[in-house]
Image 1 (cartoon, rainbow, N blue to C red):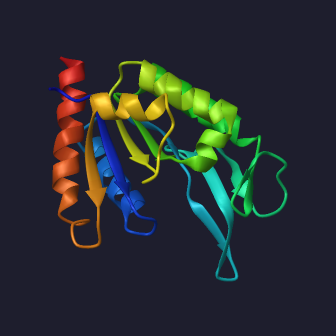
Image 2: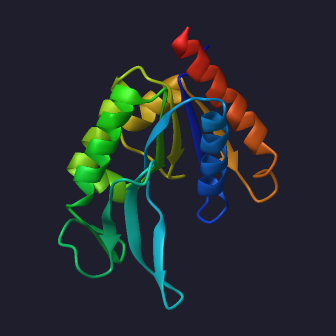
Image 3: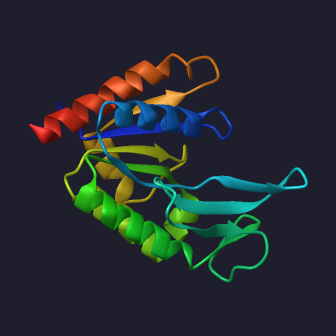
Length: 182
């Protein structure tokens, strides 16, 4: 069965984001436009203090979650920031209008605790546009997980395979993008 999505998963710190970024760069070098968002961690004094949400082109950025300073729903020791919704919604809308491939790193508890980000992810998954997504290893959302399972090819990143997976994930993403374009 032909897949529409490439889904990257694995334990924290194993290299999912690095793999995602390498594949996105290769897709772009092929002339494909990839838009969406990433959620990098922010460290201060060697400690993680929160996460940003940033559009893939870098034009939009806000706090996704912080230890202090946000009043949204809690996720572990962090609280989700409401301002993150605007970045996710605008980045996904741009991807739907202009991109060949939607890229989202990551679909996880913080992103899904925000109604606006969750809605943006569902909009991306309902669009019929190909995507490359990083999914939290314990993703269990009853609307999102079945869509990713039905239409996605999954890659589990480990320390042993993370470098070798670049070619496989790229090939799968390129296949999804070019099938959609034809």
